[in-house]
Image 1 (tube, helix red, strand yellow):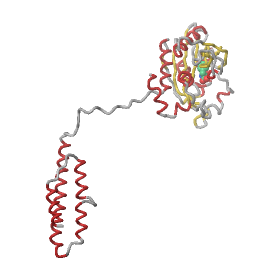
Image 2 (tube, rainbow, N blue to C red; image 1 turned 90 degrees about the horizontal axis):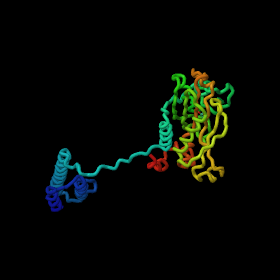
Image 3 (tube, rainbow, N blue to C red; image 1 turned 45 degrees about the vertical axis):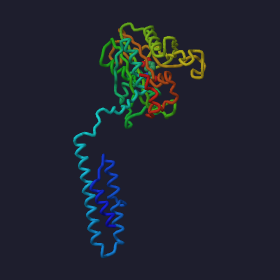
Length: 339
Ligand code: DAH
């Protein structure tokens, strides 16, 4: 046993390690619980008692030497890394994973850019609103069903404070502060008390446009709508206006575009009609202008409003509205090239 210890003593004195990994391997080999020295300590129990003294001395000596040599090597490494010799400046950087813009943001920007080219500038308003800006100023009668608790989220049962149900509230906010000419585009989030499904959500996004000036006519509205449809869905796109009703516009219309999937021939997407609905619009009701301090005998205007989710669905055929708010990167990554 003494010979074995002496052999190890010589070995330990010569120990070398090129890096921290090798050093750790040496520590395990000699000093760990199952290492060489622990093994010898085990065998020591069987050494004849008259030899115990001498063997014990050698064994202690070996243990100390091993600990000493290994900590010497360790200090050597600490010194090297303090000198930064282990930093390789020629290595290529880690690839930076860039995120993608959200599809709704891409489409919102595109809508705003198109109207921007017609001279509209962006206006925004609060999501927590009051009854006046969302309903009363916009000519909603006291008993209009849109005010119903079933549609609107009220804040703390106060019937005057609510989450806006449409971005038309921004019209009022701007007209109260500014006299015509007014040419604004208002993107934003809106809220409705709806059961969440693939086709409805309790929050979604709209863009509202408003143009008020002297002698603004329905022909101006139609021209802007046609320009928008062609820019957004391609130059071959056709539009169709159907009479409709909104409290804040008179006359009111809904606009369809020729189905951008089948080019108007008819397919399951457009329910074989060749047309898909995309927005509501109309001439601003004179009551609304007067409510906001704009003289309706001098000025007229048009307004239009559309759902960003709807336009996005048409452009990218997203079948389930819930995808927009689930943050699934597999869905979001598909829009990497779209902006
Ligand atoms: N505010 C309407 C809605 O939420 C959309 C709308 C329709 C806005 C016609 C308008 C408009 O400005 O003229 O359904």
